[in-house]
Length: 119
Image 1 (tube, helix red, strand yellow):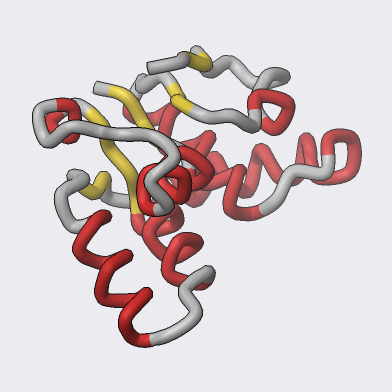
Image 2 (spheres, rainbow, N blue to C red; image 1 turned 30 degrees about the vertical axis):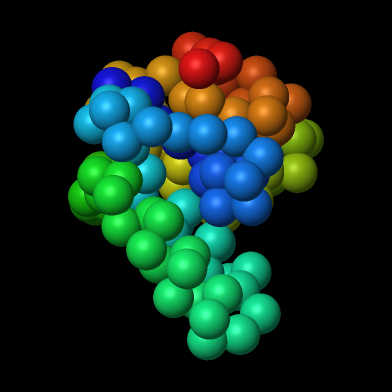
């Protein structure tokens, strides 16, 4: 299992990288990634296409443990590393579920105890 960051999903939606249906069985997102992607749509057709492309990815639950850890991470890294709430929740999801993270934005996570991967 691998957690997929928003930047990877955006490139998939835009046709820059191909993610096969077989790969989608091991690639996971959460509602934060889903919401970040939806925030970028420009019209109803774009929204429909986007929702269709992300619907195949399994969604991991965001529970109170993840939210508590994200608050802890924000308290620790918001000022020193400019951590965003989105990245804190993504990082917390990886940490709680013990998943590596596939991202292009390694600088946003390299200071954390998360395995960063290329897929």
